[in-house]
Structure formats: C-alpha cells, structure tokens
Amino acid sequence: MKLIAGNSNEPLSEEISRRLATSLARAEIKRFKDSEVFVEVQENVRGEDVFVIQSTSNPANDHLMELLIVIDALTRASASRVTAVIPYFGYARQDRKAGPRTPISAKLVANLITTAGADRVLTVDLHAGQIQGFFDIPTDNLYAVKEFERRIREIHNGDLHEVTIVSPDVGGVVRARSLSKRLGNLPLAIVDKRREEAGASEVMNIIGEVKGRHCLIYDDIVDSGGTLCNAARAIMDKGAKSVSAYVTHGVLSDHAERRVMAEDALSRLVISDSILVSPEVQACPKIERVSIARLLAEAIRRISNEESVSSLFD
Image (cartoon, rainbow, N blue to C red):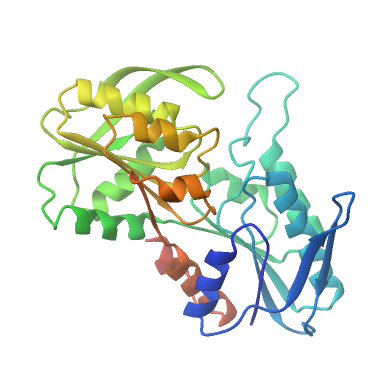
C-alpha cells in the first residue's frame, strides 16, 4: 500500500497515514508560472496499491486537476490499482438538471476521474446517494455519523431524553433518521423551507415538536451558513431550549464563520475535517471539528487487504 497526498488537505492525509502506521509517498505537486499543474511521483509505484487522498474543495478546479493528473501519473507508472480517496466530493450539488440548458456536473466529474485511470473511489457523505451510480467503477460512500454520535454523547453526557434531531430540509430526512436511530430513536423534526434562488432560502415552518427540546440539526454541507442560521432562528422561535448543528463538510465560504458567530440562536457548529478550513474558521469559538481520519484509515486498510467494508456503512 502507498498513500499520496494532494495539496487540498495535508493534515488529514498525515493523520490517515499515522493511523495506518505508514508514511506518505514522496511526490512533487506544483504549478508552473502559467498555473499548469505538474506532478512527479518520486517513489517506485509499479505493482503497488496506491491511494490518492484529495478533497475537491476550494479552489475546486485546481484540486480536481491535481487529482486527475496524479491519477494519470500513477497509471502511467504501472501502479496495480489506484483508489481516489475524496473526503469531500466537489460538484456533488450539481447532480441533476436544475433547469433548461444546465449541466449535470457531478456526472462529468465522475467521468473525468474514471477516464484519468482511477480504479476505485472512496468518499464520505455524498450530497446525493445516486452519485455513486455516476461512476462505472466501484465507489464506497462512507458516513461520518459515527464520529458525530460519539461527540454528541460526550457533549450531553449521555443524557439525551430532551434531544430532537432536525433535518434542515425534506431531502435530508433519511440522513437525520440515521443519526436518530444511532442515538436511541430520538424524535425527529423537519425544517420546511422554500428556496427562491441558489444560495438563499426562506424558512416557512417546523414540522415536529421542538418546544422545550435541545435540537441538533444534522446535514452534509454547510456553505455560506445563511440557511443554517435561518433554520436555527426558526427553531428557537418555536420554543427550543437550544440549537446545535452537526455538518460533515464545512465549506464555509463567504465569511460564513462570521454569520455563525453572530447568530445567537445557534450555540454550536460541529464539522468534520474533510475540508481544510481557514485560520478564521479555526479561530471561531462556536465552530469545532471532529476527525474522520479513523474512518478513512480503516476503510483504506480493508480495501488494501481485500476485506469487507460493509460494516463501516452501518
């Protein structure tokens, strides 16, 4: 087994390698003056099982090109198998035609990764489960719910009798229900909202009982933070005791940490380390991170050893 880290999230790659008791393979990934990506793998990978760790986060296009070129370099160097480990799969929100003459970019990116030479994909909390079907190669979609479950139990000291899990929209009910089941079939609530345009939403109603409850919003992506803050405010207006949010991918664009910090209705935002956050996000006292390195390391170990990974989906 060999691990190669792209430039998108080096701390996560290093933690994965530490948990696997191996070192990252030496590789040079740089840019020419005209911004073209240059890759040189500085170790022999002939016949090796190679895992390329790279989130396609901001700047998404640069990190995507890095991933594609690293995969191409490895296939031309006769690696026996190349697995693209993509903790955060960018373009996942473009998984369908949202209107006339619009692309399905998630499918295009899947085609690019496959054409580059990847033999397998490993990712975490895809925005839409059907994206797995966009790939013509084996694709494992892991879930960060175990890491969030552990943190929730720590925060509440195991006392969950006043906790309600909240889905931020109808489409996230399955995700919210999975967390609810892991925590002992906690009550569910749903935020019913109408989206007028991309990146903006208006909260209309709360379906379910939240009065007098500690509400935990569970979602896969937080971007600008506007929708999350609106939902937290609406839940508090319905009489909730507190509102916290647990979100796998902290995109946190456009100074989202400022919105989170300024929103009194939201007491805490917990994200994973699938995306390398900015120093401003790291310094925000309301935002904390849990690591998915253990989850990814175990999946990589099992794939390399040709063992079952199905238990990691439970």
